[in-house]
Length: 89
Image 1 (spheres, rainbow, N blue to C red):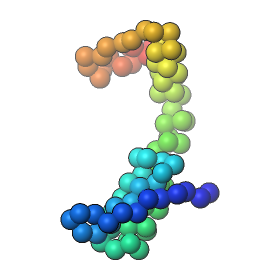
Image 2: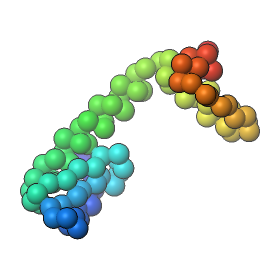
Image 3: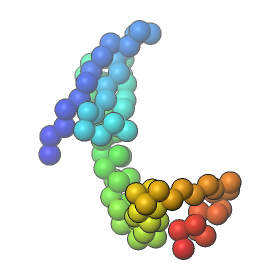
Image 4: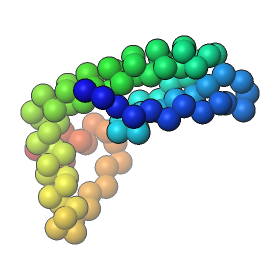
């Protein structure tokens, strides 16, 4: 699997790097080489976290229900994170 990364010099020195296909995968390093090594780990962590979310049946059920509600024009307001289980039931 190949990913495209954007490597930029940071204003404060060093480099920042982001995976264009996985925007949550962001890292940095003092050198280009270090930044590129660090983004590999960031990409792995994002992929692992994504797999864990996809394997969480309760969470996926809630995400599908929320998407369906949004598409139907229904909105929910949660005042407390503990209400999430009730909203997704």
